[in-house]
Image (tube, rainbow, N blue to C red):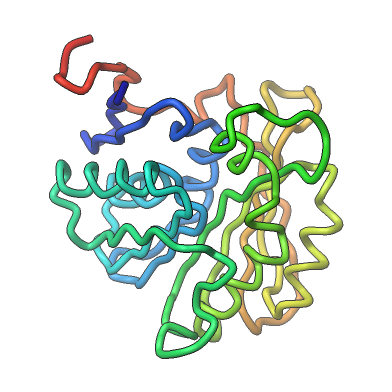
Length: 236
């Protein structure tokens, strides 16, 4: 069953079982955004939540939303039509092959990725849910490599991940010439253990990392719109 979530300025996001979004995607989309007319890239876009959050905040430049799962990419395409957000191009494709060659390399000003986090541990019996959570089809290196190929010099990349992977993420970014510039931890409340971090890097820039204030969920860091779910026909 398709459901609709309404963002702060009325943008509609379509979700379904196996193609929903979480707090991490909202924090990612808000931590850093493309400027209004910049060319943007949403990697591992799922239902398109990050690209649609940018649209809701005023982004109107070209935006490519890359997602491997056809059903999730189709939801993004439907939401693009409903919102009249023709500047967003849903692309059902494998991140691992994106921007390997051709004119797309170095074309983008801004990129984001909410990648699968897990390399081990319990797996969902649902292959779609398993692919969204486990890094079988998109490793950290795959995500960082795609962003590095796609971005112009000075272009920005924002990524969220689990705190126990912080060292690996920072090393992977630097190895790809994506210099970490801003970092924030997400916590449920002040003093609680962080469960996520968000980092913004810039391609080909000098070292210099700034630690930003914590993103506090209970203070409303991930709150949005009416938070009303409704059925595909518009009924609650």
